[in-house]
Image (cartoon, rainbow, N blue to C red; front, side, top):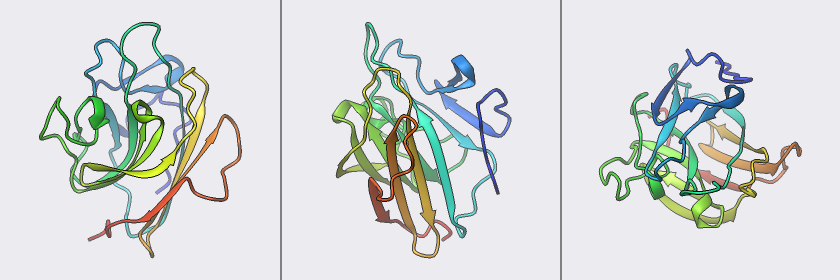
Length: 185
């Protein structure tokens, strides 16, 4: 299966949940930053075969608001709970349980989190629980485009995250890498 979204002018292949909308330039906007208690996400309608390798590259930008509350961050999540899955707002990053919804953890799942509220920390996520990797990612929160790659090697169950600023090439060394649960089980 090959999935490529040059933009999100056609969202027929994804399910949007929570506060996610199509924003300026046909991009996906996970939250609209109106009250600081939001969670949004999107899922492919056609599942990826976890017995096969896959790679994903995406660009993102975050903007510090002129007024109001800045978003906490976001995750790249692989899950098998369905296209309506959504974790808690705030520190839950739309993935884990948090004060907004203590029962909202997405499980079973594996994730990498981009935690903007915690010094741009990269977090590991397993079954809706987030833990520190000790690594950070670049994000100036000024509206400049950043990019990330997530690669999965099915034979070894290795999930790798690479991050880079702007239009830089994919780094040869991952920002974070770990062995995860067998997603095909």
